Length: 299
Ligand code: 13P
Ligand code: SF4
Image (cartoon, rainbow, N blue to C red):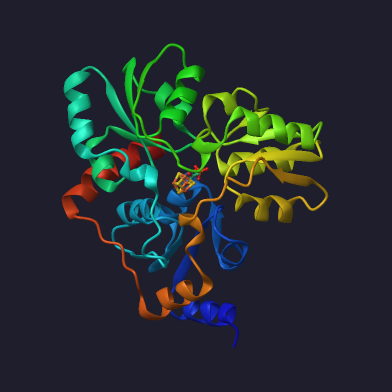
């Protein structure tokens, strides 16, 4: 039996579902039951009737799945797959910011720890940040941890006063305007589609800005044939699979997230076989963090 067949068999025996983020490697995406962006996967985690969720992604995603589905067993196959940005802000930072800006709403990007979610008013993902912030009654918004997503939201909502925190994605933040110029020169006429975790100088030069799912949707619907992709390289697998007649070029080879590449097929098999590594979150933190996530889902 191949590894894929063993995974398939165990999945059925244990009523498990495999969720994978678009940044995972192609072999993981190909065995997943659902592939999505952070928002889509949170929704899937909440709605599935499986007993076990195997989350192929990074820790904050698996924790969000656990918070939204506390009765399910959530497994993270690669136990050390984390998101450096999620650790850039602490609950203490939030408490300090609340004292400094008592009239502000605190919005946290889903790329954050459960403890930070528990201290925040509402959570957002890259696909709904503008919509969720626009729906808040407060004019002033403390936005953690991603400074780039915060500035992107601020530019789209001039009526709001956004106070950005200093965090950033170590993968998207290292891409600059010079990378865009080089890619445009190499592929003239291509449309540039980027993620809002990119810096302002990259976003300014883009033809479209959106989450991974929104980038895939835009490219699939477009009549254009060539695209430069400004987000983590894993997304190319689905883009190419869904659009075999179109050409996709990665903006720069810097767009590689080592954490997203930690999940291997053998880890998924072990996760199913031994029901490891189970994600647990403190009950009180989980209940508070759920409010932030549910506020997002209903916005
Ligand atoms: P989306 O899944 O919202 O596109 O965000 C990408 C990301 O940073 C995941 O780590
Ligand atoms: Fe975190 Fe960036 Fe990797 Fe996403 S791509 S998991 S934000 S480091």
